[in-house]
Image 1 (cartoon, rainbow, N blue to C red):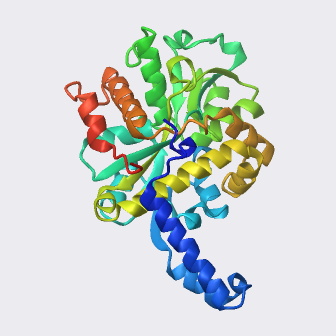
Image 2: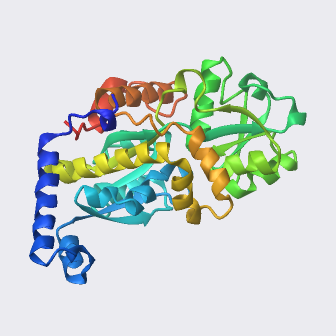
Image 3: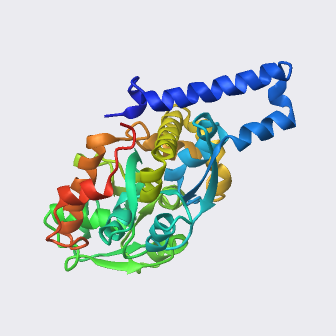
Length: 345
């Protein structure tokens, strides 16, 4: 189910938007028509907006809908004044910050968030943002043309709990290659993955865009696989998580934030070049044309909500159990139901 395409917007949200627009129009009329250009009216309008803090990784192209929502007015459209917080700490720290109210929500990768969520953080996943953005590369001289070719080889990753490491471990397992015993994993800072490959310290590298895309282009590497292959062609990888207490006490704001980001994601899909230009200041190592190509390769039109999204969370839980990241005794369905909230109904 794609909520953005569903014309049956929640009645209470539509009513709030109508009341807000009516109030603004009335204020403009009272001040003589061109009121929206006057500082006093703008300040009054800003005071009516609900302030929220949204954490994100500003260097990851998969989060492009976040600055798009800010710059194109999607947050304001839904009555929100959103402060963007560039969070560079661990996922555990991020989820703790959201759960304890230091932030109200965050955007991140499902395969990084699911394990910490198993620990019980009061954070609920409300929507998928898109799929794509993780790639595994090798030199053309390596002879590695598929994932089975990694057997007996060493793969460089940015950290041992990275979404890319988890994803390709899962896919290797499904192909009958033991990701723990048949493949060696070595950790490097993301900017040094290309150098490790050149030096022969590793035979393949795996990470996310824009880093991995840029390395593929500049070093003329071969893309062996990505996270849009096979059954993952229509699987979300980037998700929105909202503080549980916000959903319980102010569901309307959680709903408005989710809807704003879904609309921004759809806008990104329809305007990849413009979205790339908005995101470009956060990726100095890539130009707008490269960022546009990255966004076109992602599935920004796939942003599931509702039961469709809950089922995708359960599928990832199954996957992570298969490689020992989640407890084998965890019920994937019960886990998905616990960490998910359908705020749009």
